[in-house]
Image 1 (tube, rainbow, N blue to C red):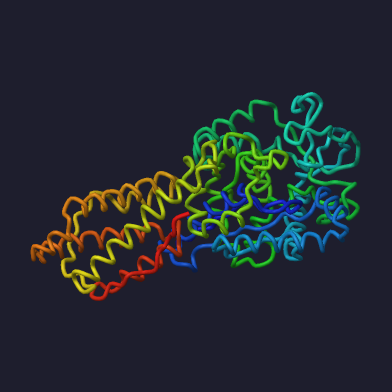
Image 2: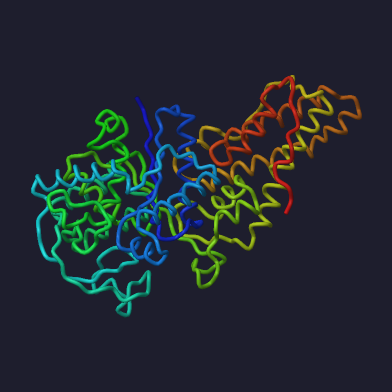
Length: 478
C-alpha cells in the first residue's frame, strides 16, 4: 500500500506565529491535499506542531508570569488557531509536552544507550539560549551569535554524547548516491560540504535545564531540546508506542523546513535514526530565506507580517496564493508585501475572479446554464502540472494556471460569443462557452491543493453541466 507522510518542523513557541511559519506550513498543506487526491485520505499523514521544551521557553514563561506548561499551552493554541484560519489540513498536531512523546523519546534514547552509542563526558563551551545550541568560536561574529547578536554563555557541565562520527561516512554516502534525497541541489551541496569540516560527536543531554524529557538512565539530566524535538517525527508516528501504526507510516516521505535547520535534519537526524536501527526519511527539502520589501524581517524594522492580518485583508485563499507566488519555492527571495494589493487585484479579482464571473454569466444567459459540447482541446498537460506540485514547483505551477486563465480570456475575446449570439449563431456560442467551461473546470481542479475554498466554489458552480450556476464574486477588488 502506498502512503505519504509529510512533516513540517515543530515550531518553537517562545513567540507568535509569523509568515515564516505560515510559508512552510502552507507548502506542506498543498502537498498533503495533492496526495490525498492521489492516494486517498487514509494513506496520507500530514504532521505539524510545536516545540515546547528548553531554556528559551522557560525564560519566556517567567517573563509572562506563567508556569512553563501554562505558557506553552497558550502558545500552542495560537499556532493551532492560525493553522485553522489558514485552512491547514494537518492530521496530527505534535506537542512535545505530550506524555506519549516522553515515552517514545525515552525508548529511542535508551536504545542508543544500550547499543553503546551514547557515552558520558564533560562539555565546556559556549551556548546560545536563543538558538538552544552550542556554538564554536569560528561560528561567532565579533564574539556574538550571528543570528541573535548576543554573547553566548560560557559554561561547563556533565553531558551525555552521541557517537556521531561512527555514522558520518554512511550518512554521507546515502546523500551522495541520492538514496537520502536532500533538495534542492544547492542544499545537497551545502550538506556534503559540512562533512568536510570535521564534524564531531555532539551532546544529547543538559544538566542545567529542567524543562524537558528526562534522560531515562539519569533523571538528573534532560534530553537536549533539539535532539528530543527531532524525535517528534517518530514519536507521533507511533515509535515505541504503537508498532502497527509506526510500521505503516515510517519512514517519513518528506521532511519540509527552512534551510537554517538543515544540518540537524540532514546530518544529525539520519545518524540518530541509523543508530536506533530505523529507516531514514526518503526526502529532505529545505526552502530558502526571504526578506520583506527588500529588508530582513525584524521586529525592530516593524516588517514582521502576521498571517492573521493578511487573512483579514485578503481572505484565506488569497493569502495562500500571495505567499506561494512571490518567488520559486526553495530559493531565497523577497516577499513584496508593498505589492500585495496590486497583485491581488490583478491576479485574483481581475484575473481568476473575473473569468469565473464572466464565463458563468454568459453560460447562464446564452445557453440556459447548459453545456452541450463536451469536447476540449488542451494545449496544456494536467499530468505535468501535478508532477510540478510533487516537485515542489509551486510558483511555476500557479504561473501555468494563470497562463491558462489569460489564454481562456483571450479566446473569449477573440470569438466574441455575445456577437455570435446577436447573429443567431448559437452552435458557435455553445462551442466557445463549452470550451471555456471545461478549461475553467481544469483550472479549479489544479487549484484544489492551493486554494481549496476557491476551487470548491468553481467546481460546485460547474458540477452539473446541464445546470451551471453563477457563484458569488470570489474576490472583491481592494
